[in-house]
Amino acid sequence: MEKEKLQAYHKANIAIITTLLIIWAIVSYGGALIAKALFASKTTIFGFPAHYWISAQLSVITFVVEIFLYAWIMNNLDKKYGVEE
Amino acid sequence: MEWLGYVIVFGIVIVFMTIAVYNRATEAAEFYVAGRRIPAFWNGMAVAADWMSAASFISMAGALYALGYDGLAYIMGWTGGYVLLALLIAPYLRKFGKFTVPDFIAERYESNFARLVALIIAIIISFTYMVGQVAGVGIIMGRLFGVPFEIGIAIGMVVIIATTIIGGMKSITWTQVAQYIVLITAYLLPVSLLAMQWFGIPLPQFLYGNVLQWITDLETQHGITPHYIEPYAKFTMTQFLALMFVLMAGTAALPHVLMRFFTTPSVREARWSAGWALFFIAILYLTAPAYAAFSRYVILKDVVGKPVDQLPAWAQKWAEVGLFNVIDKNGDGIIQWAELNIHRDIIVLATPEIAGLSLLIGYFVMAGGLAAALSTADGLLLVIAAAISNDLYAKMINPQAPEKKVVMLGKAAVAVAGIIGGFVAAMKIGFIVQIVAWAFSLATASFFPALVLGIFWKRLNRQGAIAGMIVGLLVTIIYIYLNKTQGFSIAGIQHTASGVFGLIANLIVSYIVTIMTPPPSERVQKLVEDIRYPKKIHEV
Image 1 (spheres, each protein chain N blue to C red):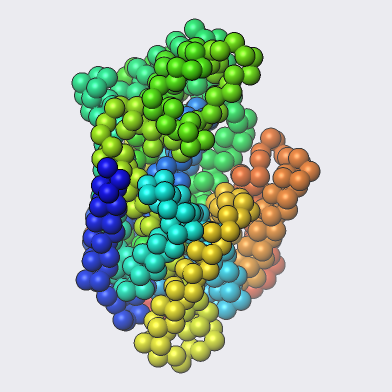
Image 2 (spheres, each protein chain N blue to C red):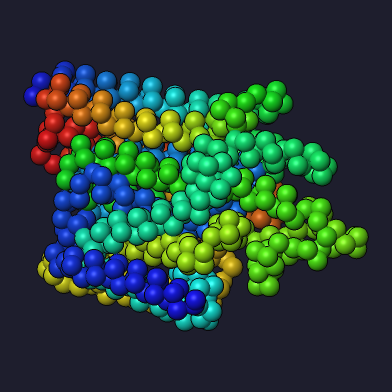
């Protein structure tokens, strides 16, 4: 197997992980950082106080979607680079 | 009606045991990793049962009730950890393809000393965590049948040991699948029926936003501050963020959860499996805040501001067993918010009564809590057995041991660790409960960096990793000690989140020691490269 192809696969994997972790951090830590301001502004989403909704629902649902997305992207990437089992 | 409780619980226990008997195992690969034949979907369900403990089932909604917004650090922490696990750890450990987390640590760092450190941490974390589950079984049995705490523990212990001994990971997997189905149904049923009564739609997860609004209105009316939904009223923001991080990193590195990812047939399935696991876990974690909000509202509406002698019937029942306390401090005959002292466990357990549901559902909820405790204890017991039989005996003491003998020793370890766990739980040592709260910090400071750096940083060597783990653990333990006894803290971070400092120390020490010492061997470098790809790249 060519070394460059393998390295490209690894690089792509790292880029995907980084992107997904940035989203992960924004919904959880980002949401927590703006919670106080959102609470004070009395913003609501779907009938929920916005800060509560972001932390209790948006973040959890985002986590689930991210993991499935990662599995899907990587399983396709495996085939593209010919590194599947 | 009490016989009904017996029928439900013993019926369910018999189902679990039957499944276990049908999945006996005698070979090492079956005993430790279920022959690596568990499809992603079912492994995900088993991970969810393994992960969600008696505390998740019974106490988490109560913690949210008490902490308001700040309690969401637990919700995000215990779910967000799966993102780290799925992206940074599980697929690579599956490719590595041995039995345990100490197996990986030992091969990656070419050191049986590292294996010893890893297996000791794995045993300490798993054992204390297991004691908590066993105690949970004792409490539930006591509430259900009024049997003494110790008898409840003995019954629970027999079931846990039997399921694990019969077929190891193979029997545990399928009982955990059944246990997940019981626990999630039991958790969803009462609160969904309550939502049906209030809104005509049985989806509490989407409807409790309105209830949060009603809570705020009632709090304003009674002059209660801070509001339930107000952020950082119980924790400082730094404590919230640090705790959330420790729970995430700790979750990603807990050995009993990681071990389940060795059971999938391929790397591909391991990736899907992490998605299913969090999907099944999220169902409960999205519902817990609804439980908390519904009970908070009922208590503000039906209890606060009412005469002391006119408690609702459900509250009276829990008051009799000392879990719902009203002390009329100012003697005005009216219940004030500050005069209420509610045990966190009753938030879930009292919901069937609040909704006026039949006793049958109350028993079923208890059975769900039982399933949650049993399924988690099984997985933990297997980690202890694997650490002793696979890592300590077969890999360190007697590498020539025949496989049958190793599995037999594993089964013996299950029995011994289980019995000791039962006795420790019966002694009700408060210190054990404390250690469970620190398990996440300890894992964050030791396993998390050893695994993630071990996978992604090829240059990290034995000296760096071992020094990092030891310093990380020491810093965490010292911080816990100073915070608990001297009230010392940095940036308002409490002992429960001490792992962030341990992690920072670990990273610094790992880096400095590694660059000052030679790189790892050719073989380890090839191993690290190989686990990046699902396909075999190097012979290692």
